Image (cartoon, rainbow, N blue to C red; front, side):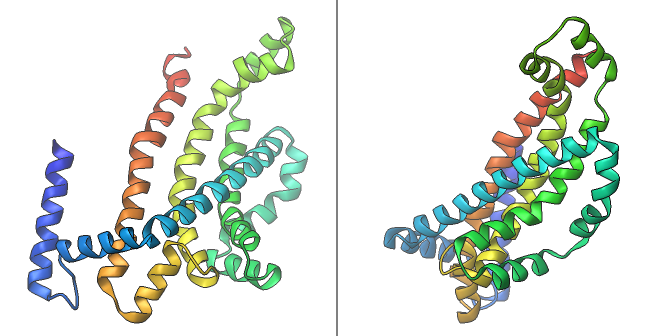
Length: 245
């Protein structure tokens, strides 16, 4: 109820702002809804929204797999960590826009370059988070697994994964928040479709209803994913920490 009340207040404030500023500066909710309906009926909205969500999922998955693997390796092997840590610091502090432009310059304006730019921007964050998780592993549990002669699979499932699950969840939650913003810039700069591309067109035409009609549903989908997928997953992942003693 509180969230619905908050949404109602937001719509009222939006309507008041539209009446105060005028449609050229802030279109009314009904105007944006009508534009959204037109785009949906034409097929442009589901096509572009679907392509953007596919890029979010693909880039996020690539970054999580590669970043988790390297992060676990760095956390378990101090020599490798010392070797690669300076490069990791550089990657963390390189602006996302630089990575995107270089990916397009070196790889061309194609889908592979777009996905590479998305994944590379998320990759260092996943590495750092999982490295900390690997460093925090309890050596006593490793010793117990050796005493009871656990197989590699059972050690991973019953010993390592419960300890690492909160770090995977944190990397996933923070990663999604980063990736969906990066995707829009990637599409704006180098793709002929997607939500970012359509928002760029709306900006060039100064078409605020079209811009908001694409921006708001995409933001709403990310909020839904955060609320109903990532938060519950994070709570479940942290169960071991709450009940492990």
